[in-house]
Image (cartoon, rainbow, N blue to C red; front, side, top):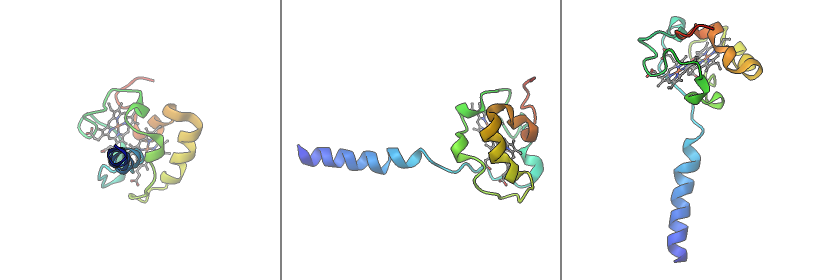
Length: 96
Ligand code: HEC
Ligand code: HEC
């Protein structure tokens, strides 16, 4: 009985806890890719509740595009949440 509980615990630790914190990576190539369109944002276009799908703790962690906007992203998101996104990513097909 103890052995089974241990195995279950081990499984939960190995899977559950680790997957919650992941860096998001969509293989963006140029700065124009951050502007959301129906093509590059098929699964999230025309939605305004960004944090439903993008955990704020997992985005803007890697400066892959080397854009000067990058350093502003975290402070602005911390300060203004979902209302900040449109400033850099466009309207996402939603009227403010
Ligand atoms: C229903 C889930 C969902 C919502 C809501 C959502 N997204 Fe996304 N987002 C995704 C997925 C999935 C991708 C990966 C590209 C795809 O498959 O659409 C993505 C990709 C992105 C990307 C990378 C774009 C690229 O060129 O690949 C950015 C930036 C982004 N989302 C920002 C936002 C912002 C800002 C909002 C809110 C205005 C938002 N997302 C709302 C699911 C969502
Ligand atoms: C000051 C500009 C700025 C603001 C504000 C901003 N972003 Fe970003 N975002 C960027 C830049 C620049 C990148 C590209 C980072 C890279 O890969 O170099 C990016 C990348 C992303 C990505 C792709 C994954 C990643 O981490 O690279 C997602 C998803 C995303 N942003 C979502 C959001 C959401 C949701 C908001 C609002 C809560 C937001 N962003 C606000 C500038 C911004």
